[in-house]
Length: 279
Ligand code: PEP
Image (cartoon, rainbow, N blue to C red; front, side, top):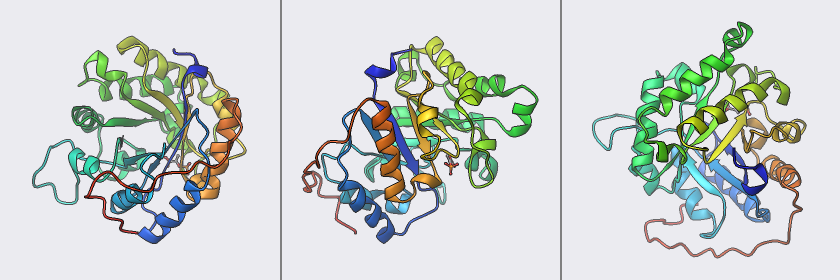
């Protein structure tokens, strides 16, 4: 894989089904006051309702990337309740989360629909953030690596080799996610992180990033980032308030060998008329 030192460390959060527009604005205002270290790549995945307003609220030259938590594979049409890749992009997304275990468990997402969505995201110039991960039962039976390998191979199956290098993969073992999850150690996840890098290397050389997610917090972030195959963290609860997110950015900066510099002054003017400031 590409040496970690030459790549940014990614730290991002999905807000899931949380935050009104006002709550999103509060988060963004706190984050904007924090100088993002150069070699850290932050990202936020607001709910669809807040995506455009968060885009408007962020300074135009902010390094923070935005994404949607899901989007449909079809370009448009009678898909009640869904949004398309094009609509997500129009609202400010450059990333599209695909295949989170919440969606696989509760909304009928399958390996096949994940593959279609990954291809649709690439076709629209978006970066798919593909979530993979096994249940406790699969892990306890010794099948974690085989399970994730198959999930990942199907997820990438609609892409040309060169396109595989544009994806981000997040390993999120189901047993480690959420309030009932058990935080993983770096040693527990190292095998799957290596496997993910190997699968992607076979297809294309390397992914844009390979992230770990599942009960990440300030107590375990540094250890999890020490894994040579981990290029960032995908965080839920611990990053839902700006102070928590910033604390994780600081830890990642320390791992990347950087301090936090002076406050950056951002331009607040937006380049496109469509981004009316909603907040
Ligand atoms: C998640 O749900 O994807 C997640 C990583 O959540 P948490 O960090 O809260 O476990």
